[in-house]
Length: 327
Image (cartoon, rainbow, N blue to C red; front, side, top):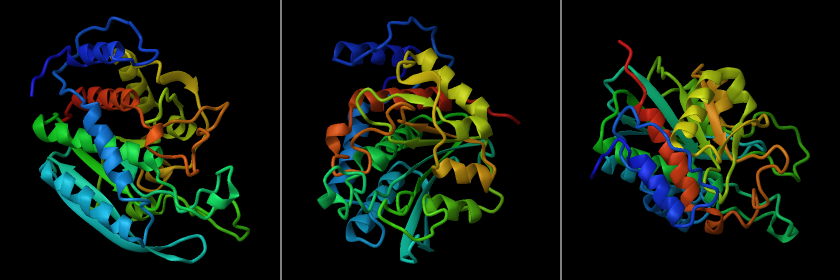
């Protein structure tokens, strides 16, 4: 594998030549460190592999098979992997057997950052225009699998070139088991059940990380990532770090310097319960919402774009490898 300090810029130019839309021509200074090259094809294939299992809904065979795949993939990259298994209650009392998949790179390093995404998919396409799809599960290509696909590629690269800090990657379960639109009962905190469980029961007693970054719905063509408000409230410095990295690497057309909405997502509980300042990189337009395919039968591979995966993955690499160890 070849490493050059200007490799990310060259890769961005190459993607532009291959048909990337709205790619900026901004000339950037050489990066502070040598970065590994993010492979968008690898990330795309990681997304597809998850979708090929079918809907990853807790208590199903597809869910169990995908969990085995994710754990094995992370182990193949030399990570210390923990499968945190638990039983949690859904909004309607259904008992869900969940597994949070935790990968630790350089676990001896006390300077750590946390990267995470949810790997389950929505049990109901309750936002679909066709009422006949409302009881059907969702493929979750963008809503779930895209973030995991990027982080699997990040794991591969971290295993080949160690950053100066330790990296933890967590795939949270049962994020998308929130009550459907048709539910009329009372429910509280029915979303993000896996991250809520981990925040109370971290894989290591007294676990600390310098900051956390959540990826959710990060693969759509022409995606736009606004500065989400929970992120701004708890971790505005991390928002600035990531959005500055996007500017430095030439991907500011994805990472907008504008305020976004307030999203209930896994990062909310990581901030509130375990006090790790965390942000959410999420495709949400304040004017148009999450996209017409969100929580519908159309959240499939048609909504995954290599250029977007490349942009998000490249920005994350810049952040990871420019993070300094503090003694």
